[in-house]
Image 1 (cartoon, rainbow over the protein chains, first blue to last red):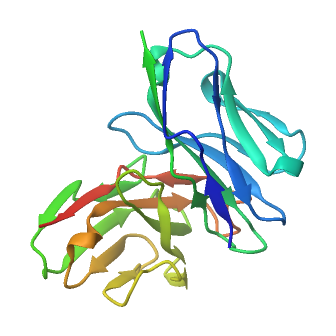
Image 2: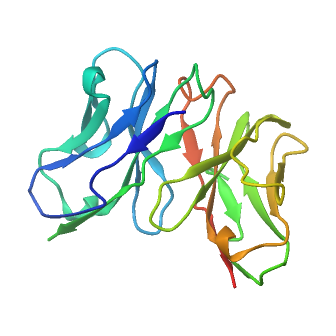
Length: 115
Length: 117
């Protein structure tokens, strides 16, 4: 079965700082990769996704993620964070040939951006 | 409604009681998923449905947990004889078609926070 690791549980940044959140997964086959975000008091929302093609994917609100197959990684980046980016971020993987319709999530990273 | 709706938002129950958590997916969505999220962890898969058929229940932790979606729309997750370890956020999601998450996005509700005392 696949698993997902997010190495940073809590990150604190000042506004305008650059962000990179790590995500590694363990599964050698075909994967679809996702980043979800949960703003305080709200539901989980899709930030971006990778299915195939260009390994650098761009999502909403200036976020991007890069799929590096050799490293089993899908790190999330943003060049300049804003206070409104304070949220919890979850990396998730779907292995369509292994677990069909299931998403496996990492443990999440809580990001706090200081104004 | 426009999104996935879950009720109640918060539920406090005494140990040993049964609870039923409700999920109303986005209208027309074929697939419905249940996840459980313990404090400080990511969501964990419990079960999912395509229409009224339960496709995978491998994530249900034991036989006290069950789920149904009798008419292919609203779903109920039932926990019998609740225990303190059942305390968690229970999340429901739906997606437009049943081809899998490689094709369609999952939309999540706000969750039900269950506390067993």
